[in-house]
Image (cartoon, rainbow, N blue to C red; front, top):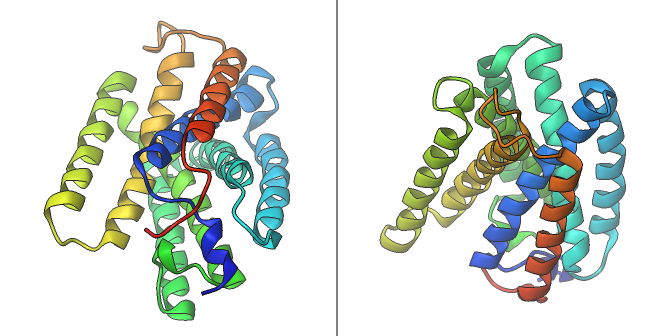
Length: 245
């Protein structure tokens, strides 16, 4: 096995807690730049894309697993995913259903191409730079898809609290599937990875949207800072080593 395998963290409870924090931070951070600062979705996407490219290139070129570097890339995918989804849904006029279908198609195409090129889309078999690049592209699309899906459900009636409960319930079903069925672990991972994103997106909106919109009207910048601090604590308390999945 290549050393690249050791660059993927263990899929423990701490991983999923940190992932939800990262997706929530992506929503509040992305909205802070595009909405609070008024840069718009296109410029915000361009700015966050630069940070994503820098982070992912550094990650791929690294020879070992570095927890903070790994999660920095995750955060850049959630922030650029937030503004990219909003740009497609709102600026391009595709709407939430159109944006969701487009992003799902891009994610599916990435996974199919990854499977065809490397023979597996399992996160336990990322042993080459090519596989790792596919891994990060898939994560980028899954986090972008999750943003569109979260907004779609929230605005369809349940609101932010209701949507968060729906996604939490679906994730609980996936967890039960992991422990009590023989469903493909790879399929369950990608389902959970995709759905933690809309959960984080709805939680982020719940924190920062106005009272009239059904939120708590908290500052996007202070919320982002607090969630970022919680992420740091979660990373420090979790395993600093990668391992088998």
